[in-house]
Image (cartoon, rainbow, N blue to C red; front, side, top):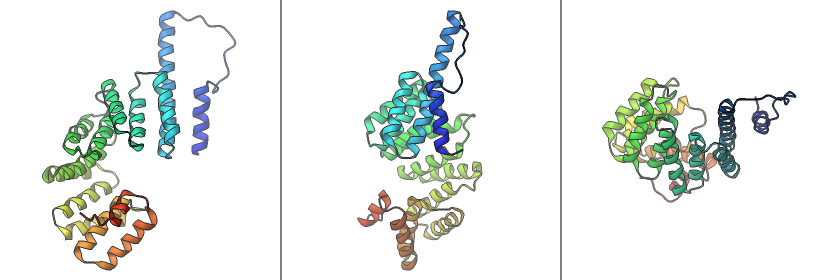
Amino acid sequence: MKRAAIVRILSLLLLGQAAPALMAQVVVPESTHTTQVATDARTRARLHTELGAMYFQDGNMAVALEEAKIAIEADPGYASAYSLRALVHTGLREFAAAEADFKKALSLAPGDPDISNNYGWFLCQRDRARESIPYFLSAVRNPLYSTPERAYTNAGACAIKAGDYDAARDYLNQALRLASDGGLLAQMQLANLAYVQGNLVEARNRFLEVMRGIGEPPAELLWLGIRIERKMGNKAEEESLTAQLRRLYPTSPEFQELLMGKYE
């Protein structure tokens, strides 16, 4: 189903237009009515959050923020709405507001693995890598978490940032064992780990394996490859990867680092 159609359906549901109104008056006992009101509020909050997530994924931060606000007003106890708003604030570089929303979301749903994973990644990106690891491990301990390999991969990437290379390798190997897609993201982080430890041959072999298995390479992967080839003295390969990074991601942080010569 196309995104426009999904948005239209969600909009109809949010406006109460998905079904004709009942003509007969129904008398509901108060306790049942209260439960129904709470259920309706949660449904509105969930739908606005899902709609906001679509706009967030499309990069429309203003509308995503408004949808999160509406969801929270509909049901102030809905943790996922705060989590969405935290992600939007992060995208807008409003980090204090993002952290406040992550903490609110976790206070409402302490065991939610997606929120734990997202907050862990937020901390890691804010140069608080050691603080982030417990949140990834909290996510993977939840037996209902459908993508534990993602949290293990994030834990590995952030352990590399923290300089805990043994733990990083353990987390990334766990991700490989669980991944159903070959664990390309975990393989990329293992290539990164080999690079920072100076094992250039292993780093390049893993990098090339990921490049063969992936479609359009992300900026992070191209930047890693550029640095590997540069350190190994492979000028032609370095220039080829640089051209790809320039063409595909001219506004990325990785390309800006390249322009500034920040190879390490």
